[in-house]
Image (cartoon, rainbow, N blue to C red; front, top):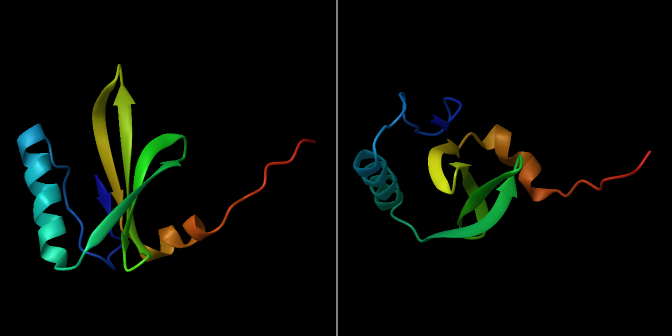
Length: 94
């Protein structure tokens, strides 16, 4: 699944199947035409990669994992949903 928010290009329908997912990801990286770096992180409790170009976050690829296998990949490319990734939130006890 992907979310470009109508601002960034994203898949209109889910991409299903290992071969199709790999082709989709590789073609997306190739179309960027720039050096993409990925930084491992956690988003909403899920393993994820921050996808950056020139140090700026361009998107997030989050993974759903069941029994040690990736069962879903979720792309967030909508810049409005990525703004909070530059900040840390302190947890406090009540």
